[in-house]
Length: 264
Image 1 (cartoon, rainbow, N blue to C red):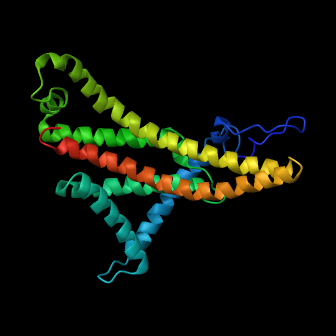
Image 2: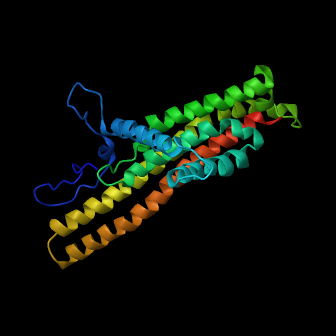
Image 3: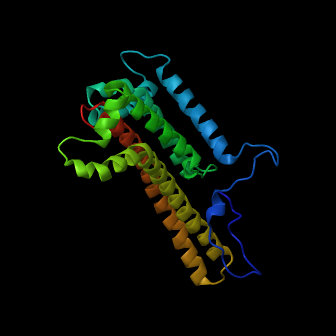
């Protein structure tokens, strides 16, 4: 968490955190490219790979504690996301959906991990790439199943609608499927992580300012309330972070299921 957003001008006033909170210089100085969000993604991805390897390297009928946890998490994605949203054909896409869920959950929850305290998915590039990948996958699945012409025909010209309506409906359906879906996937996740982190920073730094800079009992009391409130918000933010990983993965599964449907 950057503390540069806490500023006292002439010993007076508190400058609230803003978008600059999410800007980090290169870790190794000017001219290098590795920033804190990038490092979180690299280390988080490595952590997921290592934990899954350790959980499955000695798989047995009677699972160890690590294997049980790994299988339970994978089973959650398989049963509660893939099978519920797609059905039996969804088994084929469980590895991708599980990868997306584990990655997003880790990147999101990094926002409340001590010393890390930054959700990498609050930077729009990371959710955007995943949203584009999901978009490419469900469109490719639909084209493979229905053929190029059949896929776009079903998408833009659903049966049972008066033909004049197609003049308006066809371009709306096309833009909705090709552009709006990945855009909403991206923005929903990014803005939730951005807003949650910003509120936490405000409570923590505001509480710190009131306690140490704003003299008097009132300042200490208000600052203490702010710090305690940040603890409650941290727990709530953790729930939101996991929920957003679930929502992103579920919507990706629903889009895949729609592409596999006879009429979508």
